[in-house]
Image 1: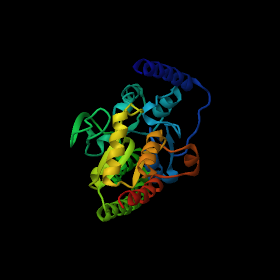
Image 2: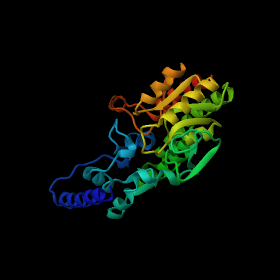
Image 3: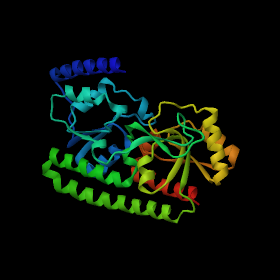
Image 4: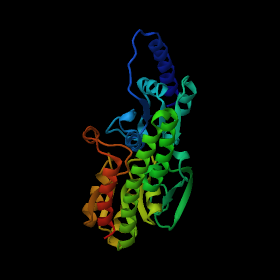
Length: 314
């Protein structure tokens, strides 16, 4: 990937020089904001409204962990006023791109906005122990910081500040949009808090990766899952599948989850073997093309999650 990224950067720089020499350039209205994945893209468009052009680099329907930038993507970053990225291993390529930027790009790193949690391997998870208890902690931090609405509010603070810096003439509008959006996030947070407090159980099960560590910690939830959130693996071992099935049966878990755009085969197997229902829990890293075209938002997806969580904790 390093070689590919180097080639892309070199190509992008060449295209950039060619663009500078071109007689015509594309005009953009207002501030230009570029985000790598869906959640910060949606935060930015909520905060900026009609005052900015907001672009998402990850194609709708694509998996974030396998994304690699194209020359066009790198040019988008170079010409942006505000660039928002995660800051973890999945977008390590960003450092080289930012080093190549000649302009004044204001970068917002999501992992610098919140208190980070180490990615962990829980009982039964692939790569962990299938007969032990408790959590074993790895050296890498979980990148999915936006999955907690409380973290989302902190991220929005930083995005709004970058917008105000890039476009001080409209700072009052960005500040007002921030206040309104944080109020909506607070309503969502209150709903999740109430659901978790009233639930008959505190455990959720994912027959999938688990990119929701920040969410689980925020609402005092325990979890079992096949893989950590940033795992490259997609095929669980027979031991992992058996553990999840046994755990669902033993604790009478009513719902088995998978995340968006994931292979649902394991969730289907667990549901068939246990009688649990299969549900999607939105991690909000991306959306389908039809959802993107329809303007589906982070709040839309997270409110769907409130209903899914209510069912899972019943």
